[in-house]
Length: 168
Image (tube, rainbow, N blue to C red):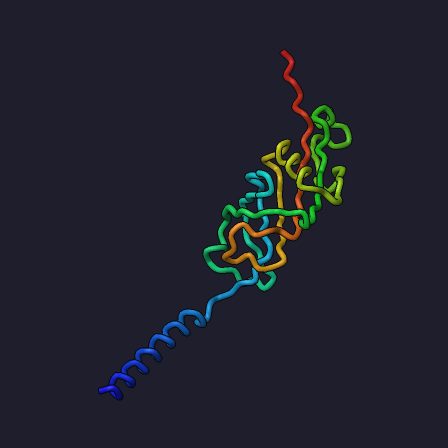
């Protein structure tokens, strides 16, 4: 009886070890996704929410991440910021026609490109919440990670002039 019990326990233990091994070491799809690009939706403290898309250098992105969606991430003191501001001409200049004839090419508008900060990003968002494009890059894959910390944040904003008051 003790031999039969020993064999049964050995088989049961083998089965349990096999099940645990399969659970922990089964092949899991892994995706190297380190970039998210989109429109800024919210910036609170050091958390930024974008609405956009994931990007991968090896182009392998799971189906559920291929659609436009909200994504939340954090920044810290080591996050690098860079900006590109494009300045829209004053409305009076556009209305007068002149050299522009009322038409503009974005590439011809004055720009300011360089280092930035979280505070500058927050200010740009508060002044232009509808026209702030952001690209966040991460040191490691963000696949399946909640609120990762960005290594760098690049943003582009079109700075619009103040509205012209209507004459009554």
